[in-house]
Amino acid sequence: MKTFLLLVTLFICSNKYIYAGIVPISSTINTNTTIGQSDVGIHKSTGAVTIDNTALNNPIFNIKLDYTYDSGDPSNSNYVVIAGDLIIHEDSELNIEQGVLVIVEGDVQVNGDVSFKNQGYFVVMGSVTGSGTVDTGSGGIATPAYIGGSIGPGINVIGDGTSDTPLNITEPDVRSILDYEVSGWETDLPVELISFSANSIHNTTILKWSTATEINASHFSIEKSHDKTNWENIGEVEASGNSTTIKEYQFIDYNPKQTATYYRLVQVDFDGQTEIFGPLLINSSSSTSTMNAHVFPNPGGNKLNLQLNNIKLSSSLEIVILDKLGKVVYKEIIQPTDQSLLINLKEKGNLHNGNYFLIISSASESITNRFVIH
Image (cartoon, rainbow, N blue to C red):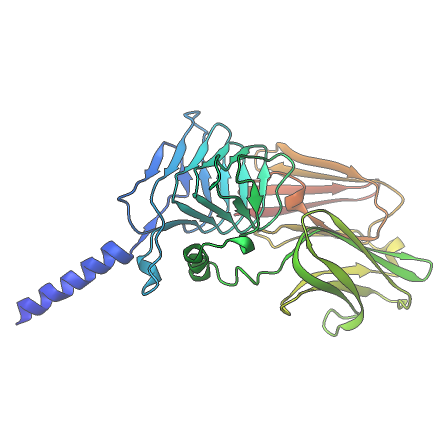
Protein backbone atom coordinates (compact mmCIF):
# COMPACT_ATOMS: atom_id res chain seq x y z
CA MET A 1 0.00 0.00 0.00
CA LYS A 2 2.81 2.44 0.82
CA THR A 3 4.45 1.71 -2.52
CA PHE A 4 1.19 2.33 -4.35
CA LEU A 5 0.64 5.67 -2.59
CA LEU A 6 4.18 6.74 -3.37
CA LEU A 7 3.72 6.00 -7.08
CA VAL A 8 0.47 7.97 -7.15
CA THR A 9 2.18 10.93 -5.46
CA LEU A 10 5.09 10.84 -7.88
CA PHE A 11 2.73 10.71 -10.84
CA ILE A 12 0.72 13.71 -9.65
CA CYS A 13 3.84 15.78 -8.90
CA SER A 14 5.51 14.95 -12.20
CA ASN A 15 2.30 15.64 -14.10
CA LYS A 16 2.02 19.06 -12.47
CA TYR A 17 5.64 19.84 -13.32
CA ILE A 18 5.16 18.93 -16.98
CA TYR A 19 1.90 20.74 -17.55
CA ALA A 20 1.94 23.61 -15.06
CA GLY A 21 5.57 24.49 -14.57
CA ILE A 22 7.02 27.94 -15.14
CA VAL A 23 9.90 27.73 -17.60
CA PRO A 24 12.46 30.46 -16.78
CA ILE A 25 13.78 32.83 -19.45
CA SER A 26 17.37 34.00 -19.04
CA SER A 27 17.96 37.69 -18.39
CA THR A 28 20.58 37.73 -21.18
CA ILE A 29 20.12 36.10 -24.58
CA ASN A 30 23.40 36.35 -26.50
CA THR A 31 23.15 33.37 -28.86
CA ASN A 32 20.43 32.12 -31.19
CA THR A 33 17.68 30.84 -28.88
CA THR A 34 14.39 29.12 -29.74
CA ILE A 35 11.26 28.33 -27.78
CA GLY A 36 9.80 25.59 -29.96
CA GLN A 37 6.38 24.05 -30.49
CA SER A 38 7.16 21.22 -28.07
CA ASP A 39 8.50 23.52 -25.31
CA VAL A 40 5.17 23.64 -23.49
CA GLY A 41 4.54 25.79 -20.45
CA ILE A 42 4.55 29.42 -19.42
CA HIS A 43 7.97 30.78 -20.35
CA LYS A 44 8.61 33.72 -18.02
CA SER A 45 11.52 35.89 -16.93
CA THR A 46 12.04 37.16 -13.39
CA GLY A 47 12.85 40.67 -14.61
CA ALA A 48 14.29 42.53 -17.60
CA VAL A 49 15.61 40.59 -20.60
CA THR A 50 18.33 41.76 -23.00
CA ILE A 51 18.91 40.30 -26.46
CA ASP A 52 22.60 41.07 -26.23
CA ASN A 53 24.86 41.59 -29.24
CA THR A 54 27.99 42.54 -27.31
CA ALA A 55 29.79 39.59 -28.93
CA LEU A 56 28.68 40.82 -32.41
CA ASN A 57 27.14 37.45 -33.27
CA ASN A 58 23.70 38.90 -34.17
CA PRO A 59 21.55 36.72 -31.86
CA ILE A 60 17.94 35.90 -32.77
CA PHE A 61 15.35 34.98 -30.15
CA ASN A 62 12.85 32.77 -32.01
CA ILE A 63 9.48 32.01 -30.41
CA LYS A 64 7.42 29.30 -32.11
CA LEU A 65 5.25 27.99 -29.25
CA ASP A 66 1.54 28.39 -30.05
CA TYR A 67 -0.30 30.12 -27.24
CA THR A 68 -3.10 28.24 -25.45
CA TYR A 69 -5.27 29.14 -22.48
CA ASP A 70 -6.60 26.60 -19.98
CA SER A 71 -9.63 28.22 -18.35
CA GLY A 72 -9.82 25.45 -15.75
CA ASP A 73 -6.21 25.99 -14.64
CA PRO A 74 -4.51 29.00 -16.28
CA SER A 75 -1.12 27.76 -15.05
CA ASN A 76 -1.44 24.94 -17.63
CA SER A 77 -1.40 27.47 -20.49
CA ASN A 78 1.32 28.16 -23.09
CA TYR A 79 2.75 31.62 -23.80
CA VAL A 80 5.76 33.89 -23.14
CA VAL A 81 6.09 36.71 -20.57
CA ILE A 82 8.91 39.21 -20.07
CA ALA A 83 8.28 40.34 -16.48
CA GLY A 84 10.12 43.65 -16.90
CA ASP A 85 11.73 45.62 -19.72
CA LEU A 86 12.89 44.07 -23.00
CA ILE A 87 16.09 45.46 -24.55
CA ILE A 88 17.02 44.47 -28.11
CA HIS A 89 20.52 45.44 -29.20
CA GLU A 90 21.45 46.61 -32.68
CA ASP A 91 21.66 43.73 -35.20
CA SER A 92 19.66 41.50 -32.82
CA GLU A 93 16.15 40.25 -33.42
CA LEU A 94 13.02 39.00 -31.68
CA ASN A 95 11.10 36.75 -34.08
CA ILE A 96 7.51 35.85 -33.14
CA GLU A 97 5.92 33.15 -35.29
CA GLN A 98 2.25 32.80 -36.20
CA GLY A 99 0.02 31.81 -33.28
CA VAL A 100 2.49 32.99 -30.61
CA LEU A 101 1.74 35.32 -27.68
CA VAL A 102 4.53 37.43 -26.15
CA ILE A 103 3.70 39.80 -23.28
CA VAL A 104 6.17 42.47 -22.12
CA GLU A 105 5.13 43.88 -18.76
CA GLY A 106 7.55 46.83 -18.94
CA ASP A 107 9.00 48.97 -21.74
CA VAL A 108 10.76 47.83 -24.91
CA GLN A 109 14.05 49.39 -26.01
CA VAL A 110 14.55 48.46 -29.68
CA ASN A 111 17.79 49.12 -31.51
CA GLY A 112 17.44 45.91 -33.49
CA ASP A 113 14.26 44.39 -34.93
CA VAL A 114 11.01 42.82 -33.79
CA SER A 115 9.10 40.80 -36.35
CA PHE A 116 5.97 38.72 -36.00
CA LYS A 117 3.91 36.76 -38.46
CA ASN A 118 0.18 36.89 -39.14
CA GLN A 119 -1.84 36.31 -35.95
CA GLY A 120 1.23 36.50 -33.75
CA TYR A 121 0.60 38.67 -30.68
CA PHE A 122 3.21 41.15 -29.38
CA VAL A 123 1.70 42.94 -26.35
CA VAL A 124 3.71 45.66 -24.58
CA MET A 125 2.24 47.20 -21.45
CA GLY A 126 4.73 50.09 -21.47
CA SER A 127 6.33 52.22 -24.20
CA VAL A 128 8.54 51.33 -27.16
CA THR A 129 11.61 53.51 -27.73
CA GLY A 130 14.92 53.36 -29.56
CA SER A 131 15.82 53.38 -33.24
CA GLY A 132 14.70 49.99 -34.54
CA THR A 133 11.93 48.39 -36.57
CA VAL A 134 8.74 46.62 -35.50
CA ASP A 135 7.44 44.53 -38.42
CA THR A 136 3.86 43.33 -37.94
CA GLY A 137 3.86 41.19 -41.09
CA SER A 138 1.61 41.34 -44.13
CA GLY A 139 -1.82 40.12 -45.11
CA GLY A 140 -5.41 40.69 -44.11
CA ILE A 141 -5.09 38.82 -40.81
CA ALA A 142 -1.92 40.57 -39.61
CA THR A 143 -2.33 41.66 -35.99
CA PRO A 144 -1.16 45.04 -34.68
CA ALA A 145 1.67 45.59 -32.25
CA TYR A 146 -0.36 46.18 -29.09
CA ILE A 147 1.47 48.92 -27.17
CA GLY A 148 0.08 50.37 -23.95
CA GLY A 149 2.38 53.41 -23.78
CA SER A 150 3.88 55.69 -26.41
CA ILE A 151 5.96 54.85 -29.48
CA GLY A 152 9.23 56.78 -29.74
CA PRO A 153 9.98 58.84 -32.86
CA GLY A 154 12.91 56.56 -33.74
CA ILE A 155 10.72 53.45 -33.97
CA ASN A 156 9.56 52.40 -37.43
CA VAL A 157 6.36 50.32 -37.32
CA ILE A 158 5.83 48.59 -40.67
CA GLY A 159 3.50 45.94 -42.04
CA ASP A 160 -0.24 45.60 -42.42
CA GLY A 161 -0.91 45.23 -38.69
CA THR A 162 0.44 48.70 -37.66
CA SER A 163 -0.11 49.38 -33.90
CA ASP A 164 -2.93 49.64 -31.39
CA THR A 165 -3.62 49.74 -27.65
CA PRO A 166 -3.96 46.44 -25.70
CA LEU A 167 -7.43 47.62 -24.67
CA ASN A 168 -8.58 46.86 -28.23
CA ILE A 169 -7.52 43.19 -28.23
CA THR A 170 -10.61 41.16 -29.16
CA GLU A 171 -9.28 37.58 -28.87
CA PRO A 172 -10.89 36.18 -25.65
CA ASP A 173 -8.03 33.82 -24.77
CA VAL A 174 -5.44 36.59 -25.07
CA ARG A 175 -7.50 38.86 -22.84
CA SER A 176 -7.92 36.02 -20.32
CA ILE A 177 -4.16 35.46 -20.24
CA LEU A 178 -3.61 39.18 -19.66
CA ASP A 179 -6.13 39.04 -16.80
CA TYR A 180 -4.12 36.19 -15.28
CA GLU A 181 -0.64 37.67 -15.80
CA VAL A 182 -0.99 41.46 -15.59
CA SER A 183 -3.00 42.65 -12.63
CA GLY A 184 -5.23 45.60 -13.50
CA TRP A 185 -4.04 45.80 -17.11
CA GLU A 186 -7.39 47.26 -18.23
CA THR A 187 -7.55 49.75 -15.36
CA ASP A 188 -3.90 50.82 -15.18
CA LEU A 189 -3.68 54.59 -15.05
CA PRO A 190 -3.87 55.94 -18.56
CA VAL A 191 -1.68 59.05 -18.50
CA GLU A 192 2.02 59.27 -19.36
CA LEU A 193 3.27 62.61 -18.01
CA ILE A 194 6.11 64.32 -19.88
CA SER A 195 6.60 67.35 -17.64
CA PHE A 196 5.10 69.25 -14.71
CA SER A 197 6.24 72.75 -13.69
CA ALA A 198 5.35 75.49 -11.21
CA ASN A 199 6.26 79.17 -11.23
CA SER A 200 5.38 82.17 -9.05
CA ILE A 201 4.47 85.27 -11.09
CA HIS A 202 2.77 88.49 -9.88
CA ASN A 203 1.19 87.00 -6.76
CA THR A 204 -0.03 83.91 -8.60
CA THR A 205 1.34 80.40 -9.04
CA ILE A 206 1.16 79.04 -12.58
CA LEU A 207 1.16 75.25 -12.98
CA LYS A 208 1.86 73.72 -16.39
CA TRP A 209 2.03 70.08 -17.43
CA SER A 210 2.02 67.99 -20.60
CA THR A 211 1.16 64.39 -21.43
CA ALA A 212 2.40 62.05 -24.16
CA THR A 213 -0.53 59.62 -24.08
CA GLU A 214 -3.94 59.47 -22.44
CA ILE A 215 -6.36 56.54 -22.34
CA ASN A 216 -9.77 56.97 -20.70
CA ALA A 217 -8.45 59.93 -18.69
CA SER A 218 -11.20 61.95 -16.99
CA HIS A 219 -9.57 64.95 -15.30
CA PHE A 220 -6.76 66.34 -13.17
CA SER A 221 -7.35 67.56 -9.62
CA ILE A 222 -4.90 70.21 -8.40
CA GLU A 223 -3.97 70.14 -4.73
CA LYS A 224 -1.69 72.23 -2.52
CA SER A 225 -0.21 71.84 0.95
CA HIS A 226 2.17 73.56 3.34
CA ASP A 227 3.36 70.41 5.10
CA LYS A 228 3.03 67.65 2.40
CA THR A 229 0.54 65.91 4.71
CA ASN A 230 -2.68 67.91 4.61
CA TRP A 231 -3.78 68.59 1.02
CA GLU A 232 -6.38 71.09 -0.22
CA ASN A 233 -8.16 70.61 -3.56
CA ILE A 234 -8.04 73.98 -5.34
CA GLY A 235 -9.44 73.08 -8.76
CA GLU A 236 -9.84 70.65 -11.65
CA VAL A 237 -8.81 70.56 -15.31
CA GLU A 238 -10.54 68.28 -17.79
CA ALA A 239 -8.28 65.68 -19.45
CA SER A 240 -8.38 64.77 -23.14
CA GLY A 241 -9.91 61.34 -22.63
CA ASN A 242 -8.01 59.38 -25.27
CA SER A 243 -4.96 60.78 -27.03
CA THR A 244 -1.64 59.64 -28.48
CA THR A 245 -0.37 63.17 -29.17
CA ILE A 246 1.21 65.66 -26.77
CA LYS A 247 -1.34 67.67 -24.78
CA GLU A 248 -0.54 70.85 -22.83
CA TYR A 249 -2.37 71.98 -19.68
CA GLN A 250 -2.28 74.98 -17.33
CA PHE A 251 -3.81 75.97 -14.00
CA ILE A 252 -3.37 79.24 -12.08
CA ASP A 253 -3.58 79.53 -8.31
CA TYR A 254 -4.72 83.12 -7.68
CA ASN A 255 -4.45 82.78 -3.90
CA PRO A 256 -0.93 81.58 -3.13
CA LYS A 257 0.44 81.86 0.39
CA GLN A 258 3.63 83.76 1.15
CA THR A 259 5.21 80.61 2.54
CA ALA A 260 6.69 77.45 1.10
CA THR A 261 3.86 75.70 -0.76
CA TYR A 262 3.70 72.26 -2.36
CA TYR A 263 1.58 71.53 -5.43
CA ARG A 264 0.61 68.16 -6.89
CA LEU A 265 -1.59 66.72 -9.64
CA VAL A 266 -4.05 63.91 -9.02
CA GLN A 267 -4.95 62.27 -12.32
CA VAL A 268 -8.36 60.56 -12.29
CA ASP A 269 -9.57 58.11 -14.92
CA PHE A 270 -13.19 57.38 -15.81
CA ASP A 271 -13.23 54.38 -13.45
CA GLY A 272 -12.18 56.49 -10.48
CA GLN A 273 -8.61 55.17 -10.35
CA THR A 274 -6.03 57.84 -9.48
CA GLU A 275 -2.32 58.56 -9.79
CA ILE A 276 -0.38 61.37 -8.12
CA PHE A 277 2.33 63.49 -9.82
CA GLY A 278 4.60 65.69 -7.75
CA PRO A 279 4.68 67.46 -5.38
CA LEU A 280 6.55 70.54 -6.58
CA LEU A 281 7.77 73.22 -4.19
CA ILE A 282 7.24 76.96 -4.61
CA ASN A 283 9.30 78.87 -2.05
CA SER A 284 8.70 82.57 -1.49
CA SER A 285 12.38 82.92 -0.56
CA SER A 286 13.65 80.92 -3.53
CA SER A 287 16.00 83.73 -4.52
CA THR A 288 18.18 82.79 -1.55
CA SER A 289 17.42 79.06 -1.47
CA THR A 290 19.67 76.36 -2.89
CA MET A 291 18.49 74.44 -5.94
CA ASN A 292 17.83 70.77 -5.22
CA ALA A 293 17.29 67.76 -7.46
CA HIS A 294 15.67 64.40 -6.83
CA VAL A 295 15.50 61.33 -9.12
CA PHE A 296 12.67 58.91 -8.34
CA PRO A 297 11.89 56.09 -8.15
CA ASN A 298 15.49 55.06 -7.48
CA PRO A 299 16.14 52.33 -8.50
CA GLY A 300 13.90 53.02 -11.47
CA GLY A 301 12.31 50.79 -14.08
CA ASN A 302 9.26 51.66 -16.14
CA LYS A 303 9.24 55.17 -14.68
CA LEU A 304 12.08 57.59 -14.00
CA ASN A 305 11.48 61.21 -13.01
CA LEU A 306 13.73 64.18 -12.28
CA GLN A 307 12.36 66.80 -9.90
CA LEU A 308 14.05 70.23 -9.59
CA ASN A 309 13.11 72.83 -6.98
CA ASN A 310 14.27 76.40 -6.24
CA ILE A 311 15.55 76.95 -9.78
CA LYS A 312 17.22 80.29 -10.46
CA LEU A 313 15.62 81.79 -13.56
CA SER A 314 18.56 84.08 -14.30
CA SER A 315 20.81 81.44 -15.89
CA SER A 316 20.58 78.33 -18.05
CA LEU A 317 20.73 74.78 -16.71
CA GLU A 318 22.84 71.98 -18.15
CA ILE A 319 21.56 68.45 -17.54
CA VAL A 320 24.08 65.66 -18.17
CA ILE A 321 23.69 61.91 -17.63
CA LEU A 322 26.82 59.73 -17.53
CA ASP A 323 26.98 55.93 -17.53
CA LYS A 324 29.18 54.03 -15.06
CA LEU A 325 32.18 54.39 -17.42
CA GLY A 326 31.83 58.17 -17.52
CA LYS A 327 30.42 58.27 -21.05
CA VAL A 328 27.87 61.01 -21.75
CA VAL A 329 24.61 59.29 -22.73
CA TYR A 330 22.39 62.37 -22.54
CA LYS A 331 22.98 66.12 -22.49
CA GLU A 332 20.61 69.07 -22.66
CA ILE A 333 20.83 72.79 -21.96
CA ILE A 334 17.58 74.46 -20.97
CA GLN A 335 16.60 78.03 -20.16
CA PRO A 336 14.23 77.56 -17.22
CA THR A 337 11.06 79.61 -17.05
CA ASP A 338 9.72 77.89 -13.93
CA GLN A 339 11.03 77.64 -10.39
CA SER A 340 10.09 73.95 -10.08
CA LEU A 341 10.14 71.23 -12.73
CA LEU A 342 9.20 67.56 -12.98
CA ILE A 343 10.77 65.89 -16.03
CA ASN A 344 10.15 62.37 -17.36
CA LEU A 345 13.69 61.12 -18.02
CA LYS A 346 12.40 58.04 -19.86
CA GLU A 347 11.28 60.42 -22.60
CA LYS A 348 14.68 62.10 -22.77
CA GLY A 349 17.22 59.37 -23.41
CA ASN A 350 17.68 55.72 -24.32
CA LEU A 351 18.79 54.48 -20.91
CA HIS A 352 19.48 50.77 -20.44
CA ASN A 353 19.71 48.93 -17.13
CA GLY A 354 22.70 50.03 -15.06
CA ASN A 355 24.21 52.73 -12.86
CA TYR A 356 24.18 56.40 -13.89
CA PHE A 357 25.36 59.79 -12.67
CA LEU A 358 23.26 62.93 -13.09
CA ILE A 359 24.98 66.33 -13.15
CA ILE A 360 22.92 69.52 -13.13
CA SER A 361 24.85 72.78 -13.46
CA SER A 362 23.98 76.47 -13.52
CA ALA A 363 26.15 79.58 -13.40
CA SER A 364 26.31 79.42 -9.60
CA GLU A 365 25.43 75.84 -8.58
CA SER A 366 26.17 72.22 -9.45
CA ILE A 367 24.36 69.10 -8.23
CA THR A 368 25.41 65.46 -8.70
CA ASN A 369 23.07 62.53 -8.10
CA ARG A 370 23.48 58.80 -8.65
CA PHE A 371 20.61 56.60 -9.83
CA VAL A 372 20.03 53.02 -10.95
CA ILE A 373 17.80 51.51 -13.64
CA HIS A 374 16.86 47.86 -13.39
